[in-house]
Image 1 (cartoon, helix red, strand yellow):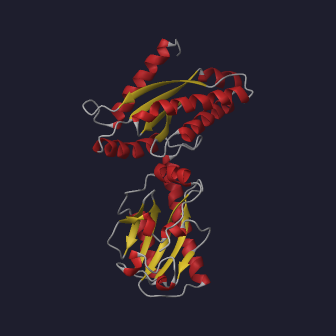
Image 2: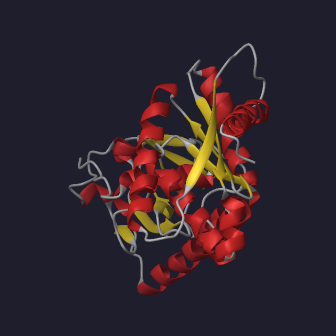
Image 3: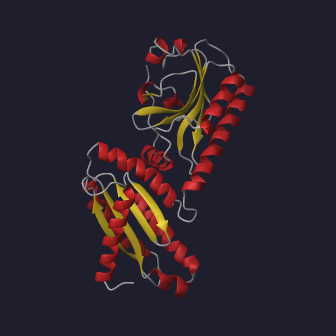
Length: 319
């Protein structure tokens, strides 16, 4: 058996996958209807939408298969996401990559596989729309075109979700997106008894930039700052623009807070030194670490970090 390779942009790919927050989602009719259509159109017993996490394959939608996830190392889709187009296996028993794969030698006894990689709006390949049969079969050029069409419809659904959850100016999650992903991560980290943190940011002297150099210049400041936040955040961290010039980062490991802040400071300092602007980008922040006896929700934790941040601004005599 040949294990699937790892994409060169794996860390960025995972960031995008986690940002859209569809892992562990189940029974979403938007996706189930696509797999029902695929199953009927191609007359196969199994049709799936697969998302590839770091070590597992999550089945976002499934027809004809009881399991919800497998390990990534045995997944056919792990191979498919490395392709620019369709990935077809006509008879897995005759393919040296798969003949001894446990999904071939055991349930669901895969013989035929056809998968088409699907992308998020930022171009990250996160999974596939795929077909499985326990009988070998051919797959024509017309079949490939139909599978591609369905994959593109799936990408359109990703686009709709992304638009609702993403800040159109900066490209990072908006308030709704931050809390949708953050609430789920908050509960998971509490169950793990992990130590995590919220950092709340507010731009310093942002209004004068808008007043003196125009709102287009102010928008550019917000985009630069958001880009720095996303660049230096860890894969499991969640970044969001909560409104205006206010941002938040949920750092999944409290030990990474200071390294993150240091890298952010270095990045902003480098930008200020090289941008040639008549102003510098500056910001204040407040940090709140997880406290299991104090915070019952992410919202409470964010509000507390917001208060800490404004205390810091008052200390610096900033509005």
